[in-house]
Amino acid sequence: MSTDQAARDRLIRVVSAHVQGAGPDYDWSGGTLREQGLDSMSVIELVLDLESEYDITFPDNLLVAETFETLESLRAAVDALIEQAGR
Image (tube, rainbow, N blue to C red):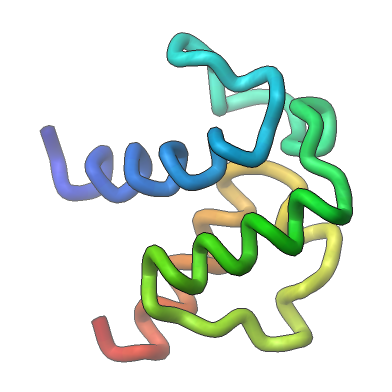
């Protein structure tokens, strides 16, 4: 498994705990996280889990709907925060 795929799988594992419709065969390439049941309360819990999992802190400017629109938009934000942290 490539490092990129392993990183994606790690993010999916964390996100899956916060969305209702994402079973093991879910196609993450389409649809929004909101369509899968991610609501404002779930976003708060997801942020806390992501911060713990990756040892990062989400700044206020990333706590917007666009960050949590799709798996890829969330992945871009997490990747940027990991890079900023020097990891």
